[in-house]
Structures are given as structure tokens and as C-alpha cells.
Image (tube, rainbow, N blue to C red; front, side, top):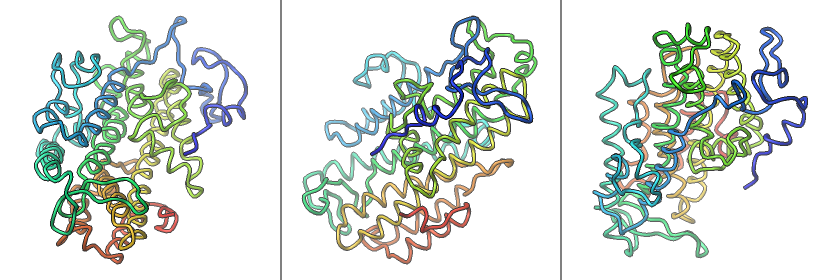
Length: 402
């Protein structure tokens, strides 16, 4: 899989200037005069003002959890403990993660805009993830060595001696459903509905303090700067050099932004997101909140498109493999299932609404699980769901599915 080169090749098209937000250089927005640095590098008094370590920690935790879902040595209790980690518990391989007081579950379906006043859905969504864990252990693990068939959990191997997939009685890989659903419920929700929310960015005295360069305690950033950086961290926090991301640094939103960008129909989307993050942060430094909010709209739109495109892509890939390579088909459809679930965490720019509600998402995923699920699903059903998703966005099923 090719790596994005927008950290090098694309930046080479820009003026070779300083990366500091305190200096001239980078891209200047003509209408505002605000300069975006060439890379996501912002300094104050000679030191970085960017920090998102908590986001990196949760990305690392999430990766260990997903890996743990295909390790039959794990129990429901051990996986639950990883998901809802408590400080000091030896839940992870990484000792630093064990020492952390952060957890993945606490930030799942936990955005200010969508869930602070909707605890019913937040609780239900968390329970869905708990269910993925419980069902993997109780349904799939006991049948790890059995051959899967309609109505029976087990393993199924891809054609030509390819990868072995471990599915439930309906053909669904719970580990894939968990991982792809988490892209929506954690990464996307925290970016577009929490840290980039005006409710969070402008909370209390944040605007006045940012205007006056009042720092957050002993830290080298204002609260508003930090909230923006935390959104950035959920996308780029796994990068070796987050200031100049190359993508595919983790198996979550970072990877799938790259995959969508690799499709000629969506080429350039990764750079659009990166540039919007840079310019939005520069706008905060410049106290230009209208420009900041314009970048929020771009980020919300593009990240929402990523989830939708991958949902349709995997539906179509699954359709193409049904009947000839069911293991590949079921793997693709399991990924599609998770991306469709994630659509309830997308955000229509300029609104407080997702592109698909929780109820609408459940209607779509339920269609995949009718009868024996993937064993029975038809091409017509997969096309109908694909078209329903594509119709909400500015792309066609053919564009996303190839």
C-alpha cells in the first residue's frame, strides 16, 4: 500500500519557509491574511505549543484491544478490563498504558455535542461494544477450530490458501465490527463532535483567554489551542512525526484516510484534511474564529466522507466475492458493517446532525443480518444499502466501490 507523500512531495510545492506559527511562511489565506505553517508545528517562546499525548495513549490502547479480540487466551473479563482500563491495572502489554488513567470505553460515544444530553444512546452504544467482546469470547472462541457454516460460528479460509477468518453464525467477524465501529464511536466522534465543537472550543472564558494569550496552567498552550490539538491527535497521534504525517500509522481513521485518498475519485482528500487542521490552528493563534470554523466544516465533511466511502467500498467488495470466496466476502462485509455503524457519528457541516441517525444505521445493519446474515445476503440488498449511503454524499456507488 503506497504511503502518502504529502509530508514531502506536496509540501515541496509550497514556499520553503519556517514552520513556526510565530513566523511568516506557509500558506496565506487571501481573505484573512492568516498564514498556515508548512507543517503542523506551532511554537511559543521557542517551545512547542502542541500536545495530544492522551489521544496517542487511547489509540495505542485501542490497537491492543483489537489485537486481543483474536487471541483465544483472553477472557471476557480480561478484554472488558482492557476496554474500560483503570489506572495501574495490568491490562496491556505496554507498561505505560497500564500506568495510564485513560480508557477507550470512557471516550466511546462521549462527545459533548452528540451525547452530553443523550446518555441513553451513549449507554446503548457502549453496550454494543461490550457485546462484541462478550460474543467473540462466548460464540467464536469456543469454535475457533471448527469450520463455519450457515448458522454455525467458526473459521473460514479465503480462497487459494489465504487468510483464515473467524466468524459468528451469521458470518460476521466481531473483531472487525468492533474495530471499524470504533473509528466512528471514538476517533470520529471525538474529532468532529467534541474537540472541534464550538461548545468545547469556546467553553467558558476560552475566547477571552485565547485573545489575551492566557495559558492553561503551567502548559505552553491556551485551552482553545489544546482542544484543537486533541482533535488532531485522534487522527495523527500514532504517527512517528505527527507534524508531517505519512498516514497508515495505525489501523483506524489514519489508515482509512489514506485508503480513500488512494482512490482516484477522492485523491487529495488527505491533504485537504491536513491543510484544514493546520489553517484552523493558525487561525486560533491569529484569533480569527470565523476562519477556524470554516476549517471545522471542511474537516467534518471530509472525515464523514471517508467513513461513507469505505462502507460502500466494502459492501461492493463483499458483493463481488460472494459465492466464490465467502471468507473474503464476509471479511469485507464485516468491515462494511462497522463503517456503516460509524455513520451515526458523522457530522453534516453547519448542523448538529449526523448524515445517518442511530436508528437509520441500525436499519441498514439489520438488513445485513436477516436470516443467516452474510450467508444469505443478496447482491440486491448490498447494492440497495450502498446506494442509500452514496445518496447522502456527493459520490456514486461506482466511485466508492472500486
